[in-house]
Amino acid sequence: LACLLPANVVIYSIENTFFLISPHRMRQEGIEVFFKTTLIFTAKGLLFGGAAVVVFWWVFLAGVLGSATAIDHRLLFVAGLSVLAWVAAGLSVYVLSCVYRRMEAGIDCGT
Image (cartoon, rainbow, N blue to C red):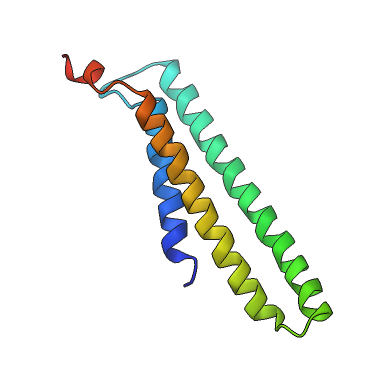
């Protein structure tokens, strides 16, 4: 529960970043749509895999740090995972804002 809100922020900001980089066009057909979809799902899978690796390493590190100090390893794990989740949320929103600042909104509006 401690990571639910930042994980939601990360998921939506990554999805919006991908959309701003390569927007979906209505009734678009062809091999381009297939390749774009494949690349987006591959990137999401790699990001999810990287997050899983970070969580598994944090499990190991929290156990080692918990046994070396007087801090309960479960409390250390939850606190560290919460901090990591909020850092990831902040970083993903920052990347989204950088991509948004680079784009020109008038191009798609016809102005």
